[in-house]
Amino acid sequence: EADIYQTPRYLVIGTGKKITLECSQTMGHDKMYWYQQDPGMELHLIHYSYGVNSTEKGDLSSESTVSRIRTEHFPLTLESARPSHTSQYLCASSEYSYNEQFFGPGTRLTVL
Amino acid sequence: GIQVEQSPPDLILQEGANSTLRCNFSDSVNNLQWFHQNPWGQLINLFYIPSGTKQNGRLSATTVATERYSLLYISSSQTTDSGVYFCAATDSNYQLIWGAGTKLIIKP
Image (cartoon, rainbow over all chains, first blue to last red; front, side, top):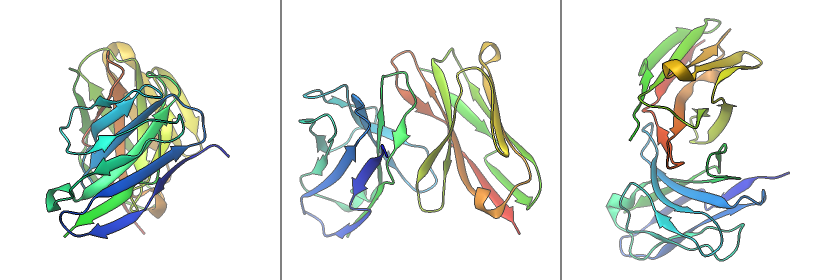
């Protein structure tokens, strides 16, 4: 079954740690996205990719970075986590830019 | 850029009631999606509906693109319908612009 996966689902870490949030999809979609969301609030786009070796920054400024070496994989990295990074991070993919987006289960990050 | 507004912001209903959620957008859009976010944070696709009407069980949606609004209907509400309902519209740059959501609570 085609799907989109995120790991870990929950992460509690200390300030200054480097972390990587994983996102993989099995649908063969070219376009992938990372959103940041505070509980119950609207989503904010922080990164997106049109395909392999393509990465763009979204509307919300973020200290994170992303890479797209393989079509199915779009990891997000925080070099030095801070309490202000505490949030939920949602990964999504779509076949084309104007198509329906499908979301992973999210990673809830808490930085102490 | 376009703006997406949802109403009402909060809705509390008894189980079995019907409800209508509204999504207004300020300019022409390429498509519109409705999502349900459950208490665990998972976003579930409900409808991909740039125009017209679609139905899926107790849920249906109608988008009138020329009048720049979309409606989500929930009939015979169940407690599992609780959560936040988001609409999101794709703008001319093919980015999803999100509404602030409608928080729905269904009481048993």
